[in-house]
Length: 539
Image (cartoon, rainbow, N blue to C red; front, top):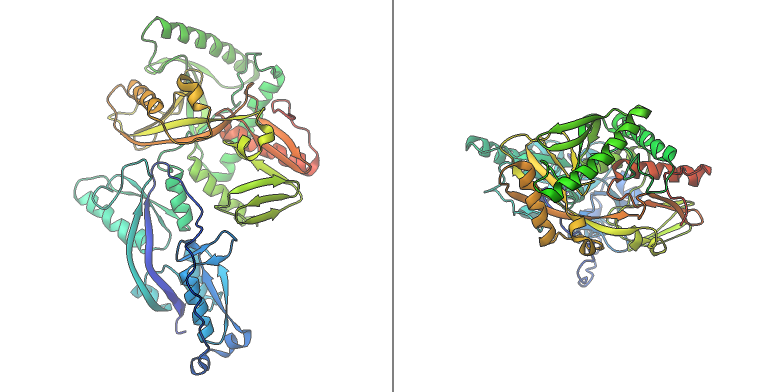
């Protein structure tokens, strides 16, 4: 649909997308379909005479557009804005004797931008409503319904089973402002839970939330110290460096909390359970618990020595330690919030741009090359695929998780790790259990670049979920992700080319160590700062 300032046009397309934020799906870049014959549109002198002088003098029609709705408007492999809406915009401008000049904007901004003269017209998937017609004029040329998408490995969500689910939609759309609230009210009237509605600035964010499992956090435990135990000398990292990592990652936690606020960074106790959750069931499990408990108590002694708050725990979930002032976070929310902060400070973000190569001064993608004086490769999983020269230092492994329906009671008031971190879990505000692990039970199969959940590991996690819950559970979501591991559990902060550094290999503990490593690498690249001994600084 075309839209402009009233009395003047918005191109509005009555098509939007509602997505159920659940599970893990594969996103692929749009390569588009083979183009049809190019239609040439000649200028119409009679129509061109009606163009306002201020526009005619420019020689072009300034069009606000949000290129994140394939196939209507999107960026192709060459990063050009294309789509059949673009073809309509080109034809409209040609008919007026003008060229089309497209200005990228997020969806909610287009209509407001028309009102203050940022664009001559807007083209996007607007819904033509009476309220909007008070401010802009519409030319309707297409009508469609509401599309829903769910993760490929999750329950399909539609109008008949959306009650109690988390559903995402784009800001300022009919789906967010009318469709979902109306549907949620029907749920409540029927005695069902309301729909939890998440909003996003553009459809890419909304779809990415589905892909990332935004409704079921992928870990999200903010644990200081990374994967290095404090008391053990096995890693070869000096004791002073291991202690420094705890203190520096705690500083990173406070920095993140100050930036994002307590609504995003939620303070909570962190439980470290020796052996299996809810205690041992046989002699082998008792021996495992005893060994883990001895190591934990040694760690606790060091913590007390250096002023890190820690208490012993002996309760329903087992025996071990509790760190009373740790935190948790939804990784997808954190990523989106940090991206928003970066944009406000002038950063340029390139989404859906698969990296094909990195060299000094350049990052190559399927959509073009980004050039910069310095480059930081800051990823966790599949770092060895992006930079094969690091394959001897870091290897990718698969971590698998699942989420359940709300339990009948609350069993956890904070995140919990057990079996030396090979299982981890937390219970969200709605009572759902989010749990992952089992990698050590299928180690050879889980040392892989593949990031799809597998039946053997999922069955293992099913059993641990029921053991933790103390009751049968109903699984609603299953997903997997890649992380990088190192042999000594020490994360990488290493140069790979002149002016290029890489960070990664957090061994499953990157939520705080990751940003700390990235901050360290930036300091090294820009100021020549030293890399602390708790990171591996060369390969």
